[in-house]
Image (cartoon, rainbow, N blue to C red; front, side, top):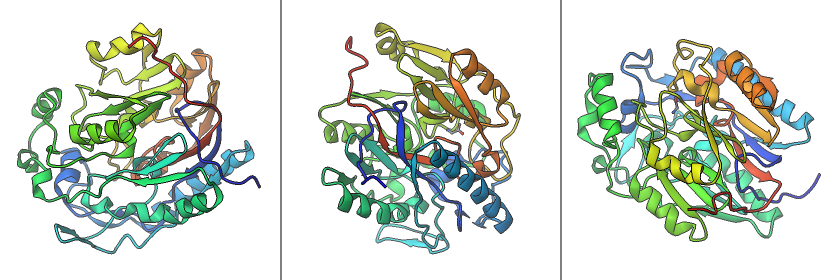
Length: 369
Ligand code: GLY
C-alpha cells in the first residue's frame, strides 16, 4: 500500500484516493432555520425528524459499499469516515438543536485544494460537529504525509442573526422563492463567514463558488483570503428556489466542458470567463425521474451529480439513462453506478465522495480573465 499523499487541484484529473461516505445512524434533523428553508414546501420530510428507518440505512450502505468496491477495483484507494452518534443533540453557548445529520456526503464538509484539506464552516446547526467523522482519517493523513495541510475554517456561531426570518414561513411559495433567489436574497445573512465545501468547484488556479443558502459572500471572501494564490469567483444560479451546493447545477466533466442545469443557467456576465477561454457550457440532459426518492432533501437534478474518474471516464447513477446517453455522446466512457436509494442520505455520486488525491498539478485553465 502506498503512503498517503494529499493532492487534488480540480474535479477531473485521474482519481487515485477518495473518501466515500457512510449512511450509519443518519438522522432527519429537527427543524432549524437554514434547513427549513431548503426542504421543499411540498416535501414528505416536512414535520418529520429522528433516525431514518434502519432498512433504508442498510440499503444505502449496501450501495455505498458497492461504489467503494467498484472504485477499489479500478485502482482507487478508498477510505471511509467514522460515524459519530448522530442522535446526540448539538449544544454550544449560542444554540442547541435536538440531533445531528450523518456522514454520507463528505463533499459538503471537506474541501481539498492541492495538499490542503479544509473543513468548511458549515451553515446548518445539525452539521456543526460533522467534521469529527473525518478526524480519524485526517489525523492519519497528517501522520503519513509530511506535506499535508489540515485546515479548518472558523467555526460559526450560528445564532439567529445568521438567518433571515423571512424564510421561516412554511408557505412562501415557489414564485416568491425564485424572485428572492434571483435577487440573491438568501436564507443566510452576512453576519459571519459561512460556506459548505460542496458550494466550491476546483478548476486549478480558479475556484468557482456558489453564493446561495449555504454559502454567503463573507464565506466567499474568507476563501479568497485563505487561498491567496487562487482566483475565487462568486457565481449564482437564478432558477433554483433552494440553492444549496453547486454540484447538481454546474458540473465540469473535463477541461473545456461543463454541464449546466438548464433550469438554473449561469447568468451571461458570469459565463464570460469560461467563454473567453474556450470552455463550452452545455445544458445537462433531463433527469430520468419526475420526483426525488422518499424523504430526500435533493432535487431530481442529482442526475448530474456525477463523479469524474479521469478526463475520459465518468460515474453516473445507473437509472439516469438520459444523462448517461448525453455523456456518451460527448465522448466520455460512462460507468453506471446504482446509488438512487442512498440519495436521501445526502446526495449523489459527487456528494458522497471527497477527493484525497488526483494526479496532476495546479494549471491555469482561464489565462484570459
Ligand atoms: N442543490 C441540490 C439539488 O439540486 O437538489
